[in-house]
Length: 342
Image (cartoon, rainbow, N blue to C red; front, side):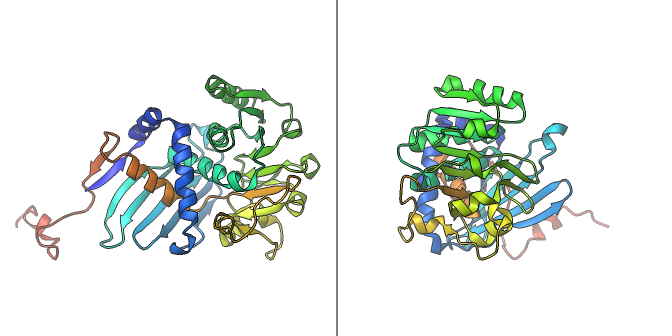
């Protein structure tokens, strides 16, 4: 039997536990798995691109558990009444290949993306950071705010989105949770005086939502929106002025902000910083950039976190997903007796 957390149970679990508490716990799981980076199989995600968007599979294994996530990215979906992103994932036991756990990962991906941002900020942002600019107020934005409050104590937010309704939505959701939210008049206005800048826009285009002349010494940039070929958010000049950190360089060079620069552009993989093998932030004036595209190990961590968190609770169902004949060699026996005769 395979345990399964569907949308209803995921939503109930998050409401019962609290999104900020979940993000904080998941942040630690992701960091722990980055500390054992060498234990994992690693490949760039497998992507199928169409004019409508992209559908991807993201696999990895630590030789004990195998995980994959199915995820799409369709930026025009909201105008048709659909989510931009929909996802689900699976954990399997490598010893027999059986799937042991499945979960919706639309909500879960938002939580894990925010947790990864928080984990990176622990190592790259100034510890005295107090103000964050959010460029893009879509589905991911509230989760990012909660993540940075849990990791760095950020309460003050400036937000900019081309959709005024999205900014109103963000204020409506976050102000009751204790955030001070200011709606900016432009991306440059939002960024002015910020310690941390998170960009999280959805258009599948070579966009420039942030220009180099808006960047100030000491900022930490958390670039979340660029996550497939042909989709970027930052002025390329920002890359050359910052120290750039990535999850898995072979994937990020295809999908991240660094697809805009040469293949030998220097970057540091974040696991090296987590393990103390490379420096993160080294001065208060340094500009750091986390070029985040999402990587399979983070999904592995998120699935593992949820699987352990819901044990012994009512927040999962059981799927009869794998046939179990009395004789493992006689699969036909399950159906043969039911077959019509003559």
